[in-house]
Structures are given as structure tokens and as C-alpha cells.
Length: 296
Ligand code: NDP
Image 1 (tube, rainbow, N blue to C red):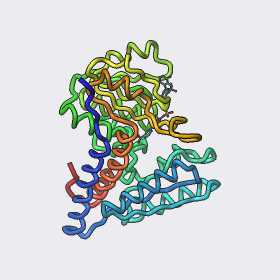
Image 2 (cartoon, rainbow, N blue to C red):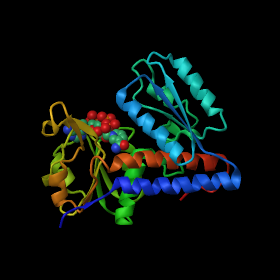
Image 3 (cartoon, helix red, strand yellow):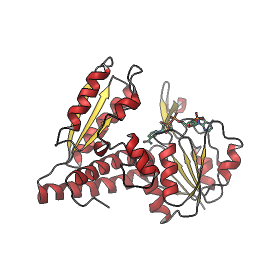
């Protein structure tokens, strides 16, 4: 049977519609508009695209969007002063500093300067600790989007064998933590893992977050497994014309889809869910800041 294609684009649209509904209720019932501030340092083209689309979608769901674009050579104290200002601005409920930062800026220092209650990316050390101990926190957007798709597809993932390939702080580790909090049996694989194909073959759920185009072939996938492909890799596409490119995931889609029970495509899988979860986190932060009931 061909794998079910998990449509992240449609799911994300549903999540954004729910966010918009909540935002409208907050306005009508409490006169509150959630606000999201995005800080971009430098002119990395991919980051510029992400920031633009985050701003556009923030406005589309009825929230306030503020963008701060800073020079590539912005000094650390100036960036920290801006974060302090946003921390103290009651109209801002979420703050996102677009990563990666230029080399001269200390990413940990900058992220940990954000008020944890406004840390809608969930990267602040307090939120990492809260997630790690199963307490209420801000959850990183990409892994949260993956978990939502898994819960939607499976209902419960309790007791399932999950393998996360990749151990970054922004995807792999929080993903593993979320799967564990949902009672999956979790293995984290990385570049030093021995016999990666065998490790992956055991998995009922495979989450690939590596950054290597089509690294996972279909014959690593257990029959019927669910494959969540986080990777976004741009590769040459001479078949589309000279100099053309296309996006591929970390999994070889066609061969993985032959064996998987369900799979996310790239593009149109995890990517759209990430921004939808960012918007949802901002509403959650706004509700918490005002002592109001949070969205489910
Ligand atoms: P990082 O580069 O920070 O981490 C990559 C991880 O993959 C590392 O833990 C690394 O292991 C592991 N790895 C590298 N090579 C291998 C290998 N041959 N075998 C097994 N593991 C390996 O990447 P990110 O976590 O930031 O991102 C991963 C991918 O997800 C990228 O393609 C990125 O573009 C995409 N992404 C997509 C998002 C979305 O919204 N869809 C959001 C964020 C990221 P080690 O630690 O040992 O070096």
C-alpha cells in the first residue's frame, strides 16, 4: 500500500485558522492583541525569507508584527539592549531572534537574554530545563510541529520505537524530549552512531533532522513506519533547466514512501508547521502573560 502523505501545508493552515480565531476572541473579549517581535541581524538570504514570511503570517492571523533588522556588524551590547527593551514592552508577547547570528555574537548569551516567558522559540535555557523535566514550557516550533503531525496521525505514540537522527539543540534534542514525554521509546542517532541503517530499521517513527540531502534511503525504513522529514536541502535540478534548483529532504522520498506507512513531503511537510507553531506559541505566551486560558 502506498504511504499516506502527511500534508503539512493543509495541517498548518488549520492551525493558523485556530490561532486567528483565538486572536479574534482575545481582541473581542479582552481588548488584547498578541505581539510578535522578530530580530534579524545581517542579511543572510534564507533568514530574510523566513523573517518575511513569519511577519506576513503574523499579520494574517490578526497579531501585531514588529521586525527589527540590524546591521551585520551590530555590537553585542546593542543587540542585548534591544532585547531588554522588547522584554519590557507589554505589547510584545513573543520575541524571536533569527538564527544563525553573525560569528561575533554569542548565540547562547543572546538567547538567554530573552525573557523566558516571551521565548517563543523555546531555546532559552529555562525552557529547555522545563521541557526536560516535563513541565509547562515554551516548546521549540519545529519539533512541536512534528509532534502535532505524529499525534494527529497515530492518536497516541505511547510505547512506539522512535529514532531521531540528529542531536541539535533546536531540532534533534527537543524532538527526542517531546517523544519521550509522550511515552515513545526514543533513540537519538548522530554522526558517530554505529550501524545507523540497523538503528533506523527498528523504528516505528523516524524523524530525520540531519541536513544531508536524501541521506536516508527506503531500505532503512521498516515496513509501515512513519517518516517525518525535517531536512530542507537545496540541490541542483538540471532537469528543470540550467542553474535551477529544488528542495529535498533528508530522506529519499520516493523509496521511503514505498515502505513507509506515512511520510511528510519536502517541501510541504514540516516547514509550514514550524511557522504555524510559532504563531500558536505567541498566542500561548500572550494568554499566560494575561492570566487567561491557553489554547489547547
Ligand atoms: P545541525 O547541523 O545543527 O545538526 C545536524 C545533526 O545531524 C547533528 O546532530 C549531526 O551529528 C547529525 N548528522 C550529520 N551527519 C550525519 C550522518 N552522516 N549520520 C547521522 N547523523 C548525522 O542541523 P539542524 O538540526 O539545525 O537542522 C537539520 C535539518 O533540518 C537541516 O536540513 C535544516 O535545514 C532543517 N531544518 C528545518 C526546519 C523546518 O522548519 N522544517 C527548521 C530547522 C531545521 P553530530 O552532532 O554528531 O555532528
